[in-house]
Image 1 (cartoon, rainbow, N blue to C red):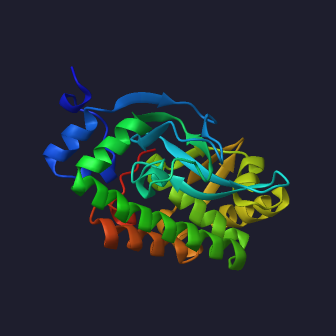
Image 2: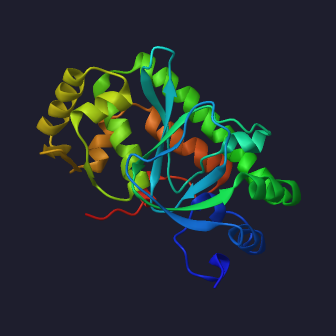
Length: 248
């Protein structure tokens, strides 16, 4: 049975397409299982596939010449990996690392280009997503420069929760420091502060969000601003905090 004829986990970016367009697109996709820490592409690699996460999420990481790395974005079921192809560029600008294991829809770059060429509605929607992603990347850069670690950590946990659809994550302070581009001691202090306020708990590498509303107040405004941008440009499939399903 074709993928388009089966019930598959939803990618909200594709869910915004008309039914006929979406089914045609899904017919060229395959379901793949992404494993934690899988590297899907390196900066400068030729893009072989595009990915539409359904039950997984991917970190976009910028790499400097000295080897230092910083997460600049997260892609979950609200988006896609491989947006450079929408702009006609076949080279990946980022290191893409699976942060949350799970299912994604994958399509070859060749098939993706074909669909873009022949499906104006798909091209329009994905162009809008590129705009949203570029806005979020720029916002992350400003956030990294001007906001304190505690606010950035709260924002990062909320963004991860929205894409994992879960309030609990297996994360080490070393990994968080790597993702946020700060020293481990800074993450330890920020996490301790959030825990003392009753917003999260951290036990043996497991972080649990205890008070999502309180964590939003502790986060910088970048979190809600990014959600509003997505919803304004792409519609009600955005990451509205009060509509994101969660489970424990």
